Each structure stands twice: as structure tokens, then as C-alpha cells.
Length: 298
Image (tube, rainbow, N blue to C red; front, top):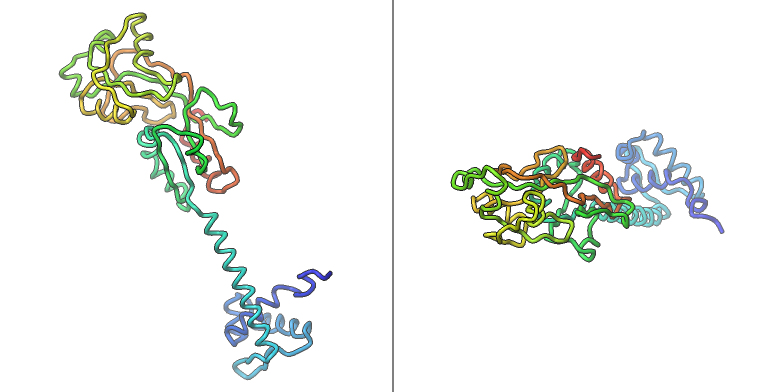
């Protein structure tokens, strides 16, 4: 069985013929293809010799298709246009947005302040950031990259450790004007802002109390919210003392407008990991390289 290459011959002859037939000019075809008029004429002569028939009648300034040329022109144009359309569709699919999923708090306080740098470094990448209060396997199936906090990700061989974290108590300057804090005991006696922790590997006020005060129990928090960033906003508004995650990434670790109060910095038992779910995508590879530049641990 003869192959398509054997039946069609060199594709250069088809490209030259299709352009000349569409434009009705060897010179215009040469300009479009970026070659000389003589090169187009030679390719078409080779094609006519292969077919054993004339495809054009040559005039002084223009060319006209013969009946055979007309038949081949319709077929060649349809075939090349179909290939071009399919390649364009594939290219559009490959350029779909790069989806990054992470916690709402990490998005707000870590990723968003760095977005300008990401855009400058990767101007051709369309990024979609999806932030959740809690990531689940069902949610992350549609992602290209996920960032999650965990004690370890041995089940994910491709996981990349980005950075660890310390947790410390912080409050706004305005709050401290009305609630002077000089000792860890003063912190315990202050209005505390609590937020729900997703699991046992997150640091809570109970953990801070054990590290700072031993067996002494802390009073109930004056405000309890379900989301970390709501707790930060409440502290920024002077409503109490909050536990802030100081991300160890080489950048500014603090929530804006808050200052540390007396007490320990507790090292988080886990770390933040980047998991590339579509490592074969060029955009994923480029994003991973950018994340590496943002983290001093790497």
C-alpha cells in the first residue's frame, strides 16, 4: 500500500500550488510564502510533471487554472484549511487558563501580593486562582496546581515543599493603646480572636497557651470566626489578639497593620506543599519555576 507521502509527493509543491491558485499569481504566492517567484514556478512545474498535465495556463502578467488545476485547487485548499483549523483549535485548548487552587487565606495574604511579579514573569500565562476555605480531593481534580498545608505528602511523589511557618500572637497598634500588653499573662487576659482550624496539625490558642503558660488554661475567646482571614480583619480593626501564621518564605511574614505581642513563636508541625497535577503542561512547568523563586526553602 502506497503511503500518503508517496501519493502526494513533497508538500512544498502543494503549498506553492495552493497559494498560486488562490492568488492567481506566482509572484503574489512567492510573497506570501517568503520565497522567490522562480522557486514557486519550479515547485509548480515539478507538480505538473508528476501529474503529467498542466495546472495553469501562463500569461504575460497572470496565470489561469486549467480544468485539472481547478479540481486540485478545490481539494488542496480544503485540505490545508482543515489542517490549519484543527491546529488552531488544539492550540486554543492548550492555552486554557492555568488553574491554581489553594486556601482562601493563603491566596489573600501570600499569593495575591505577588501576582504582579507572576504576571511580569509569565505574561503569556492566563492564571485562574480558585480559593477555598478547605480543599478536598473532589475540588482539586480540575486544578493544574494545588497548594496545601500538611504534615507531609508522601502519597504525592511530585509534591514540592514550599515553606514552613511559625505562629505568633499579634494585635493592632490601636488595640494595644487601650489594652497594654507587657507579658504573656497579659495576652491571656486580653480579648482573644479564635478561628476554626481545619485539623490537628494547625496551631490553636490552646497550643499557644500550653507553650506560653504551661498548664494554665486560657479563658474562652471573645470572638470566634470560621475563617482565618476574617480573624485577621477583626484584629486589624482592633477587636483583639489573633494568632498569625508567619510564613517562612523569605518575604514579609506579617499581616498588614499588626505587630507581635509577648509570647512564643510556635513552629507549625507541617509545611505548605505545591502539587503539580498537570506537569506536562508548559504553563504548569513555568509556574512551578516561579513558585520556586518565591520560596527561600527551595
